Length: 73
Image 1 (cartoon, helix red, strand yellow):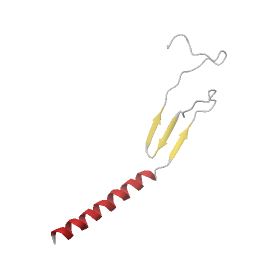
Image 2 (image 1 turned 60 degrees about the horizontal axis):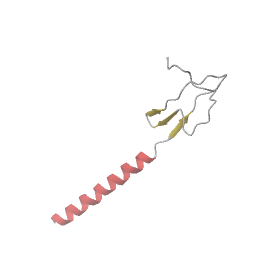
Image 3 (image 1 turned 90 degrees about the vertical axis):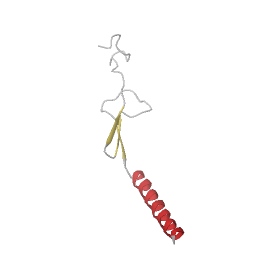
Image 4 (image 1 turned 45 degrees about the vertical axis):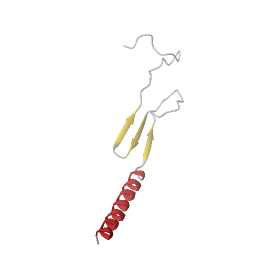
């Protein structure tokens, strides 16, 4: 009796874990790039996954020279 109960609980737990992992895979990803982007980088400005927004930083380049400013300020 105990072995059967443990077996059923194990099966149900396995099903629950597999269902929760497939739910996390269903979250859509949306890649965000700012308009007027001059540099074609290998990364996006942001990625929206479900309710979480991941942002990346980049330097503001001088539009005339294409170089970063000498001072961070």
